[in-house]
Image (cartoon, rainbow, N blue to C red; front, side, top):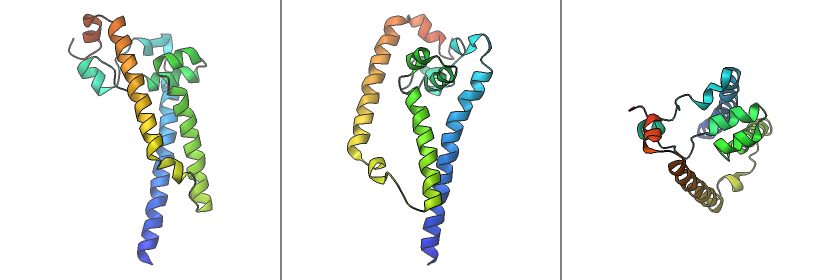
Length: 154
């Protein structure tokens, strides 16, 4: 009996952590948007450790800026920073709604979808191809000096 209660409590804790994580993902860009005077996010140093070291963007680079510009209503600029930015917002809201519903009803939904290997591989391939195209365009549009200026070494 004790192990079942522990398992249920652990699942509920993970769901609460998921809700908190999704909420933070939605809230942080909102506060960045409030402090984006004179569009300083365009020229500020990236928070990405990979980009700070190499000067090249990682697969997740641009999602926060994408969310900020989505909140400002500029969908074109949002998608230009990262094509998955608007989908992150939708995913976070769906995650919050589903996890709250699971806690209230004590039932699990979408487990077949969340643990689907084919879906995970397809999303991974999409992200890899998208990032490869972004890297090609990044190198094409920036000189080596520009890339070095985007790192912390210059």
